[in-house]
Figure 1 (cartoon, rainbow, N blue to C red):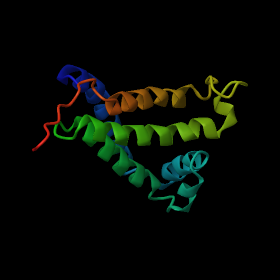
Figure 2: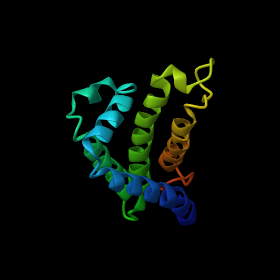
Figure 3: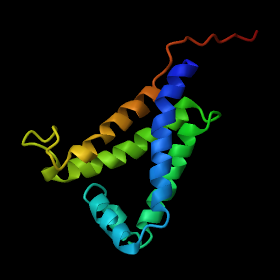
Figure 4: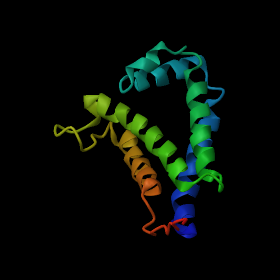
Length: 142
């Protein structure tokens, strides 16, 4: 992927996600439990984690994804893989609660608009995963 395109796809989402992660590291226990309850609507297994530490765990994960996006020596594909997985997890919360969507199950309701934005992160992750269109030349050794 050309460098400017890579920077454009990685810089702002990386900074946004890293900042979000940093803000969750010292989250109060009540807020952490609320976040866990919301996350469990999409990924029920998270309810088994300690609720007072859940926000801290999410913060660490967000710092890892944001850091990978901001680190130049991490390949676009690896950063895209992390962002795609992360945003897919976020979208499970969107689709896990029928109040987030209109009757068609896809378009966001007024309640779901805040979570629907995570679809943009999924699109960016997929763009980073996509091949750049250049054909690699493989030399055959005789």
